Amino acid sequence: MARPRRGDPPAPDPLYLDLRARVLGSSAASLGVEVAPSESLWGAVLELGASQGVASLVALADGTTSLYASHGSVVAGTAGRGLVSAAGPFLDAVRAVVPRLAPDSEPVGALPLAGEVVLYALTPSGRLVGAATEADASRDGHTLATVLELGHGVVAELQRLDGA
Image 1: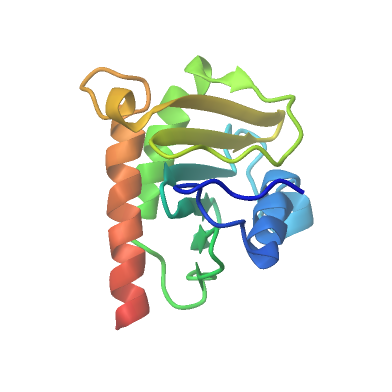
Image 2: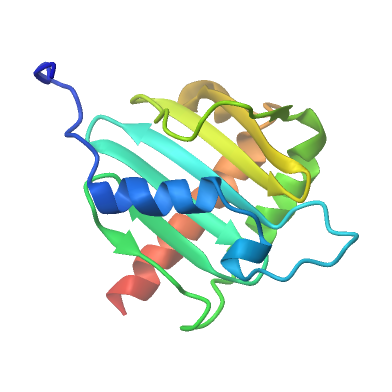
């Protein structure tokens, strides 16, 4: 086993890896998310790589909104505590970029590096992916710009609700 280099994020917590794999590797039905036949999106995962690790924002069509951190902290299951109001616009923004995302045939597991953003759109026909550096994704006109901006809003609302 390779030793971590100075500056490498800590190894991801097994709970984080399990929760992440469960969402990215599942179908809507297996997670109990009811989706209308005409719906093009049943969920999204926005991952933000940082020097301390990865934050994974999960928003599902049933209102479940969670934030998983690779160091093991979780703000989860907010559907039961009240819908996170920012999640609706976030999912709408993801829905709008679905045609510009690529099918993701990679096995679940690759985490973004510091400064990288990865968006997974969870659709009835499979998982789609888009990735960029956070600097590029923050630029006006970038495919992920609105998704990233609204994703930050969902994270802020989750953190506010978790502290309430």
